[in-house]
Each structure stands twice: as C-alpha cells, then as structure tokens.
Amino acid sequence: MFKTTMFKTIIFTSTLIIISSTAALAEPFKLTSQDITHGEFMSKAQEFNGFGCSGGDLSPQLKWSGAPEGTKSFAITAYDPDAPTGSGWWHWQIVNIPSKVNELVTGAGNTTEDLAPEGSSQIQNDYGMRGFGGACPPKGHGVHHYRFTVHALSVEKLSLPKDASGALAGYMINANTLATSTIESLYKRD
Image (cartoon, rainbow, N blue to C red; front, side, top):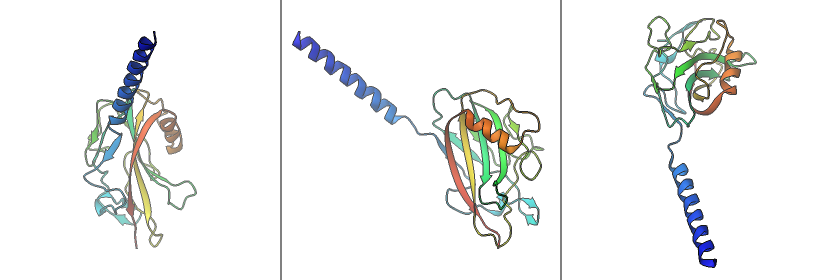
C-alpha cells in the first residue's frame, strides 16, 4: 500500500514537472521590426508628411511570433503618450488582422497601396485619416515615445462602427487582448 501510494505521488509529481517545463519553454509573444528598434530613434521614413513635417510617412515593417493559444485575430496600435493633447496621439490602429498573419510589410498603413492583410480594417488616426500617420512632434518639445504594439485578440473580429474613435477602438482592443508585445521607438524635432 505504501509503495503504491508513493509510486502514484512520484508519477503525479513528475507529470507536473514535465507540464510546467513545457509551459516554461513556450516561445514568448514577441514583436520585431526591420525598420524600427526599441529605445532608438526612428528614421525620417516614419515621419509624417504634413503639419510642418516632410517625412516618408511609412508605417514600419512589423513581425510577431509566439501568439498565445486561443488567439483568433491581431490588432496593431501606434501611440504617442507624449503628445501635448492631454490624451496622447493615435498614429495607427489596424484591427481584424487574421490569426494566420504574422507580419505587416513596410507601408501597410498606407490605405491607397492595398498592402494591409485582407479582412483587416484601419481606424481613423488623430490626423483625421485612416491608416498610418507618422511622427510629427512639435518643434522643441523634446523626445517623444512611439509605442508600436501587437495585440493577440480572443475574437475573430472587433465590432466597431465605421467612424470609431481611437479611444473606442483602444477600449475594444484592450477588452479582448490575450497578450501584447511592444517596440517603443523615439522621435524628436529640433
């Protein structure tokens, strides 16, 4: 009796260790880019073209891996918390990216080029247009932080009205997020 109980305890404990080890070895949810780097300044390619800025207005290439189990779609957001608005600045929100997609090419935020994944939807940014709007902080305002975040979502589609605000889209994204990964890049205009 004692040997049988001890044997069952050893088997149970070993099974828990194996399960825990497998979970610990799972790949973390990670966002990478060929165009931007965490903690470094973005290039003129990611600067807005307008409002006194003359950049390329190109959304960066983004690639992600290690999405958690249960991911049914993705959303990408680009946000500047340093904008002198009292509420930050939404530069980009693209939602309803199918779960089979794990990369956006450079320029996917340009709505006239048709480079965004089929079925996705780009929300109006704080410049008042759909798609990506690059960095354009006020001159002399110092360094701004641009948070490019991929969200793994628990739903296939977010039900948003056609003219959803950045705040409403952000709320719905966050309400359905399983995991996120962020690259925070910098930009400054002297």
